[in-house]
Image (tube, rainbow, N blue to C red):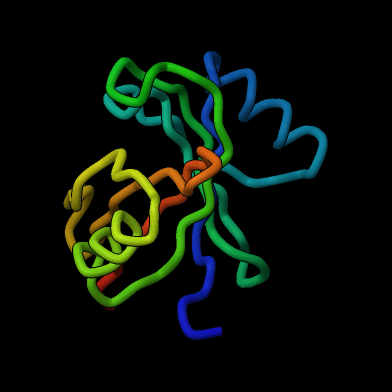
Length: 122
């Protein structure tokens, strides 16, 4: 696959309840919640599966619940340009979230929220 899915997010109104639910049901190991990021917590994929996170939605993303996959790309802006040319809508511009990690988000023509992720190896 040229641009694999490399991350997922489960975002809802109550991050801590969602983390407990997925941790209890699937035995997922989660990092401590980060209050400054909507109690976002990362899932430890333990070398199997893709990484992901569970957090709360904020005003900047409509505060709604969603599940998002992130597709790894080498140039998020170039892909956002392709998305809009093909009928999608940019939801979040290219944004550096941490050192070496850049994301952007778009809606496909049917409104599905998809993320783009560029990670620089450390």
